[in-house]
Length: 310
Image (cartoon, rainbow, N blue to C red; front, side):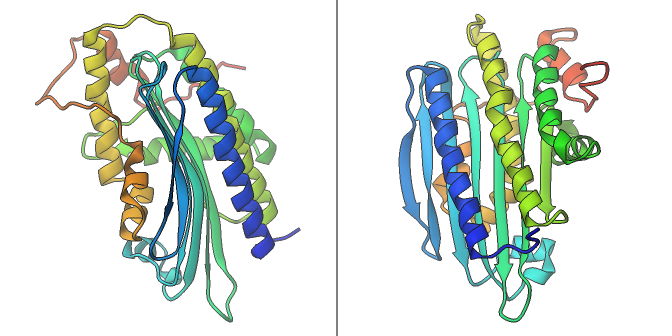
């Protein structure tokens, strides 16, 4: 078993990620039926580049972005060395696919997924490397059926790697996508993993592929169940209010956003995850007992969505 990646392994990860971007964009274009992703290829002045694909004003997606990036350089940004001091003085490569889908219909949840690989090297020393990623769901008018389906797919993707993997990465997702300044979750979670290297390169790469491949299986059925549900302007306003929480998390807490901005990444590509319309209301509270209130009291608090489910 290959435990330490070499140049051929790094190239295989890049090939997979670019293919994953292609497959996800094709499937979401078919699901949308009207919208098309427009590609914006870019280069990073410090080394590397990527291709950002954006859809706006589709039949389903008000805005969606699927980005691939592969950046490299000789020095690490402060956000990285603060988290991993052993990276100081190393050259690095970081590559990944990251996506966010913001549907127009408030009954269709926002979804986010990311899979990534990082390697830092220094002459005379073994490389420091890891995989990371996951996917999470942010509903506005939540359905237990959708939440159970989302988590069932997450569990099934993790199952070949051990019974403890899903509970561990489910909890990590609940803990990570949490707005500490609001004391509330961003959504109903899913999976989040980072710094994964303890299984050796081949097994870790296999796990990353399993998570990347599971995203469409998790999201497309939810789209089809909810896309034709009628909605009101009041419900659209609530969606935009909750989107404000999405913005707050990405700009205040998200490690990927901070790394991208501090490492000289392309700002437009890093911030493509932000929703097209958003609102904040001072001290706004939903009506007790309403569907809006139920999101906060019944769906956002972390729970075992698969308890009693097959």
